[in-house]
Amino acid sequence: MADPELEAIRQQRMQQMQGSNPEQQKAMQEQRQAQEEMKNSMLAQLLDQDARARLNTLKLSKPEKAQMVEGMIIRMAQMRQIGDKLDDASLVKLLENLNQQMPRSNSTVKFDRRRAALDSDEDDDDYGI
Image (cartoon, rainbow, N blue to C red; front, side, top):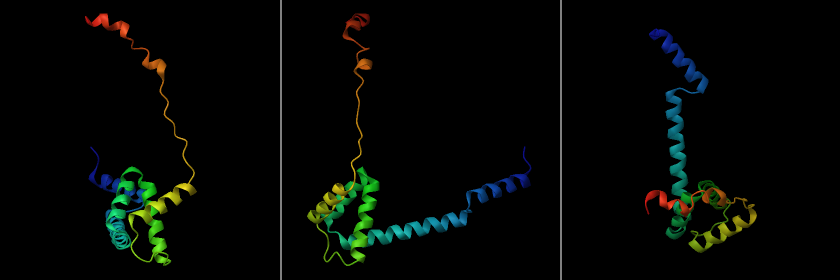
């Protein structure tokens, strides 16, 4: 069994290696929550209900892209490029422009037919069919 003093020293060193103590972690978490709430309130003021729903759907499927779009909308508002609330059609145009500027990923799906062919129907007599 480890000495309680040694265990306490070990935990302190682990926290120092991680670079923060529980109070700092809590403060950082609260700061992140406050920033998230501020971003959400700004987006609620900048987007109408349909556009907000589209952005939330995008966030579920492509979180990185949605985060980039949210930042772009907030920057546009700060530079006074957005007059009224963005409607769904305006958001779709913004997304289309963004898609044209971003390179497409070359993701492919390959189906290995050789592995699928290992299980043939000729083996059905093994099961009494």
